[in-house]
Amino acid sequence: MRPSVRSRYALFAAVACSTLVLSGCGNDDDAAGSGDVTLGFVNGGDTNFHSCLQKAVEQTAKTENAKVYTSNSHQNAGTELSNIEDMISRNVSALIVQTVNVDSLKGDIAKAKASGIPIYLTSVSTSDADDILGAAVVDLKKVGSLDAGWIAKDAGGKDVQVGIVAGAPGAASDLLVGGFKSGLPATAKVVANQPGMFNPAKAQDVAENMIQANPDLDYAFVANEEMAFSVRKAFDAAGAKDVKIVTVNGTDEGLAAVKSGEFSATVANSALTIGQTAVKNAVGLLDKKKVDKIANIPLVLVTKDNLSEAPQYCPK
Image (cartoon, rainbow, N blue to C red; front, side, top):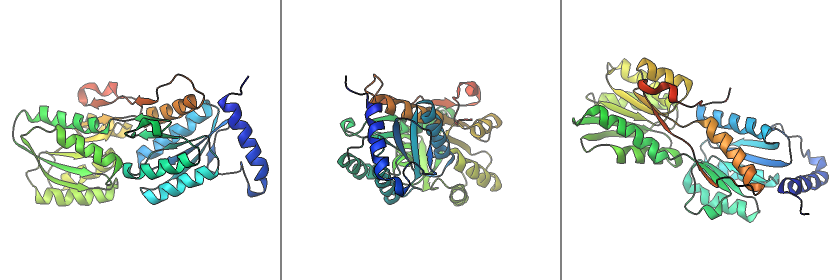
C-alpha cells in the first residue's frame, strides 16, 4: 500500500530535519501548529485584512493537523519572492500566498514549481489553473461593481460626481477599482482617482485634497474600511458630511459605521472564510481529496437593511 501524502511529507520532513539539526530545524519562532503537512504562508501586507487572514490560516492549520510558517511581504514584490525562496528552503509541503501584485505571480510560481512545491493562492487566481495547487478567490471586480451598483440605485439617474481612494497599485486594488468604474452608470462621473496605499494617514491626505478640488463630490469609493474611516474624517472636517462613502471588508467596525451612517455600504468578503478555505482546501488537495480546486468566496453588499447577513470577518 502506498503511504498517504501526509505520511510521505512527514517522512521527508523527518529526514530533512535530521540532517539540519545543527541549524535549528523545527525551532522557528514564526511557526504555528504541528502535524504531517507543513505550509508556508506568505502574507502580502499589514492591513487589518492581512492580520485577520493570517490569524485564520494559523487557527485552521491547527485543526487540520498542519504546521504553518508565516512571513510578510509588506506590499513589496521583491520581498514576496524572497519570502517564497525562504519557504522553499524550509521544504514546505505547499505555499499559501496572498500576493502583493498579480504581475509578480509568474515569477513566484515559476520559482516554486522549479522546486517542486505547489502554490495555493488567496484572493486572486491565475489565468492557467494548471500552474497552481488551487485558490480561494474573491471576485474583486464584483466587489467593486456591487458598490457601484449601490451608487447607481441611490443616485436614481441623476448626474453625480464620484471620487475613488484606491489602495496600493497592483493586485487587489486595481481589480476593485476596475470593477467599480465599470459598474457605474453613465450619469456618474469619476472626478478623482488617487491611491491611498491602504494607509489611513495617506488616505486622509488624499481625501483632504480631493474634497478641496471637488467640493460638489457626491460619493466616494474607498478600497478598504481602514482608509474609509480616515476619508470620512477628512470629509467631515471639510464640511462635506453629505458625501456618501461605499467601501470594502465587513469588519465589526465597518458594520457599525454602516449602522451609524458613516458609511452607506460595504461589501463583506470575510478574511476568516478565505483563510479557512485556503488551509482546508490546500491540505485536501495535497491528500488528493475531492475539494474544489478553485473556491469562490461569498460576497455580501451590506447596508443598514441587511446588517445581520454579514459573515464573521475576523477570527476571535
